[in-house]
Image 1: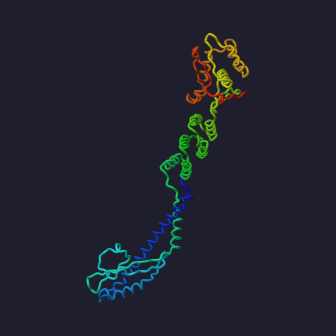
Image 2: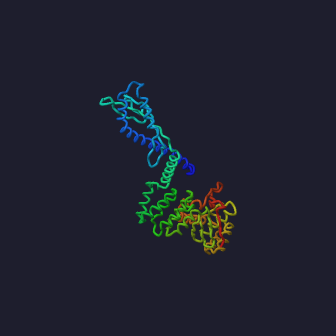
Length: 394
């Protein structure tokens, strides 16, 4: 977009030139019309008397022409704004019986008259020359151009159809017309995402328009990327009772793509959303997380007929440290890690995360699998990269 500092001077110069040309043309045309009217009133009778006994070309015509041009040599320009300093008229043709229009001959004035009582009409043609008062012309028209540009610049732009609809919608919500216009001006500056969120949140109980617009105007809202929008929608579905809930939803949308384990509250925090799991599924999930942080994270399900007793020891120690159920601890001591128990707890973890987040959002935070071609059994690990998994000790 061109800066106003560049186009305003150019616009002023062009407009000044146009106005100056128009003003000069109008002043000259007005003066010519007024002079033509005066000449038409005064000259016909005098010309008829002077030329009624005219001779040929060497007759009285040169004397009449000289006298006319002497009288018309200095014509003061009238008017409240004297754009013409003074004018003079010259006789182009004293006697002409031609019906040629004046404009095609270059003259400015014509006077029609008759000799005696005859029907023969004569025509005298004059040209007009005026000196221009350039300082006054340019100063006056430059000032007028500046005023016109200022009026155009300050004149409010017509409301777009979208803004009129917005004002109507706000008025329908009980907003006063003056406030509706002011709020619609703010909304018009929003991008598509901000307007979509406004349409979604406007009218919710307990949420006033001013705080909503202030929240929408935040740069963090305006610059959210498409991957963050579903998280914002998820957070907003939990209900909005005030601006603090909007800030909480925004914090969730902007939260890093992390899977965090709060060992004190026995919660997993997915993209900023805390999810409480039952104790045993939480410990199994935490056990998989520790394996992800200390290696590649893969764990091959043990054979159905041969549970993994050695592999159960880290999980037993974890449950004892954080207060796991005695029944689950005793079961691991007695039977070790079994494929059935591992599958059941992974399914419980999946059910809880899908219930809280939806399948699409939960999927990246769950498990990925691969098949061991030699044994036909499957290995599992947390799908997220290790640098996105965090464990907070109690």
